[in-house]
Image (cartoon, rainbow, N blue to C red; front, side, top):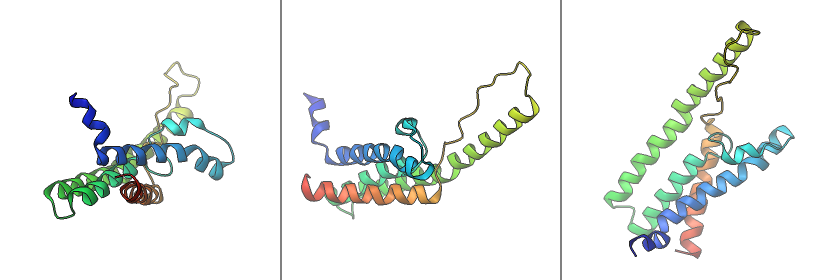
Amino acid sequence: MPLSGIFENHSLLTAVAAWLMAQILKPPLEYLRKGKWNWGYFFSAGGMPSSHSSLMVGATVSIGLHEGFNTPIFALAIAITMIVIYDAAGVRREAGRHAAKINILINELLAGHPISDKELREVLGHTPMEVIGGIILGLTVGILYWMYIG
């Protein structure tokens, strides 16, 4: 069966494991930061650590360890990882800041008017520390997976 190879793809499994670990860590880390549980962070696209960074760095490290650090596929993985990390920390972070400002405008200027009260999502991107946390987690998961499983 062609799809059975998915479960033998160590780079994919490493990437998914790094992403899942990041998502699992978000609620407890948010609790430590704010003192209250928010389980929505498990499904969130923001917060500490960056699951985007973890996923991509985990996959990239795994590709390097399994295929070689001098291969074209590793070069491609590095390029895509750089784009995703830049997007997570830059473009999406700025979109989150815009959403926060727009929400303030709506709440202050349009209070009481029959305009949609649905606020924009403000937790879209990551702070540099969240990205670094995701990178470290991705590196750790990638290396540990390679050492013990792959």
